[in-house]
Length: 359
Image 1 (spheres, helix red, strand yellow):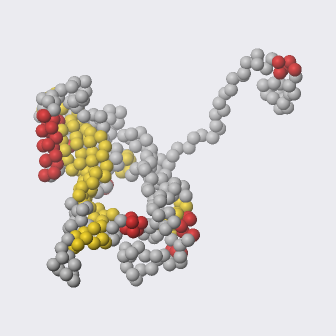
Image 2: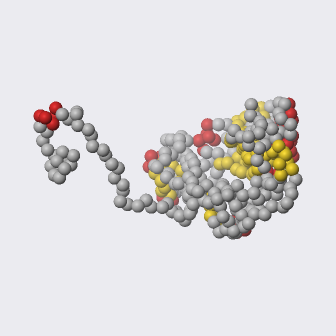
Image 3: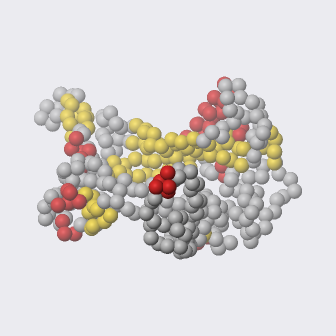
């Protein structure tokens, strides 16, 4: 109506000439109408409206938690994102909305996971929605009083004291962020030892000053162990066998950046479908050996989680180019004669294309 008459709100009835010449007229330009409401700045209890001075981003969302329904009807299916579910007080078990309607007033036990005297009731279950947004944790520097992401600040909640933390921007090292104006001035000694490092634009290692010595950008400051020494030696020997440029193997560093004991609660669905075999001796006839019997797996499995990282010195800084998480299972929970004892499983493996030299 506006395009036809200009001033009226009534839609004019099309005439014959209008129909015949409709294809000849040009379509008037359409303009995007800007919203009158201003865009609100994101703020929550995690970021408090701040942005990280390193990555210039506010809250960073992480991968949502995977929830598995322990109901009989779902048989171990995952709970869909955004749906309603019910969980126990300790969060060990969860049921979807359909399986929750079929639960009895007294919840069944997990075959030894809970003591016999502990009784769980359906009325005590907590109603939740699977829409929780997990974000990267924040940490504040005691020197510049700025809040930043823990992953950007090279912080580890298990090894860093938050009450006395100094961010990488305020440490006495070469500042890779020239646009940041911190309170701590950077000072360098007049001379530093020389180390082998790959330099951008060159395919062979060069001798440069060791500007990262003793800083958070130096992988050599991480403690070594017999495993890291063994792996580093094997990697360096492999570099020599591949006829890499001279001193290229000296730019590599291998460290175990995480080594902790963890436990895993085996879901009831898995325990019912899988059985562990072991060779035991019957009590009624001790002379018979090698009898194969089957037993329900343990409710809790303990293992050691290790993170192995490979660093290479590029432009004077140690860059993590390879990382692998492994899980080491001993025979404490599985059994001495089990096929699963003394095994190592690769839980995660990732790398970036920064290894030099490239072939």
